[in-house]
Image (tube, rainbow, N blue to C red; front, side):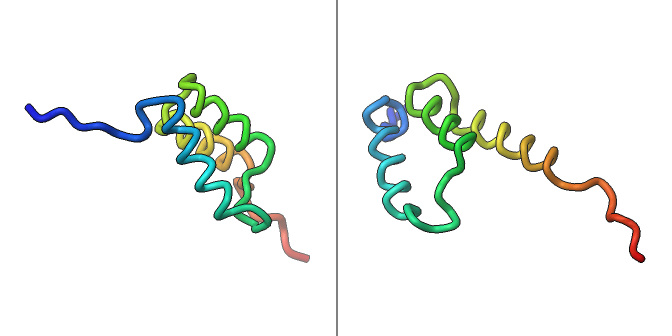
Length: 73
């Protein structure tokens, strides 16, 4: 089986990928908010996988969405 290398396998590689993404989104509506930045920092350090980050962001989004529309007047 051929061994594959991913930039996301090392802390340095994850930091480089994150820095590139941050440079693209800086000053836009896509720039991460504080909680998102915390998750990204944990991803870079290897505490979370990218799948973990996505799962946590999706869970946060579900809690922010209203479950029902407010009554109309």
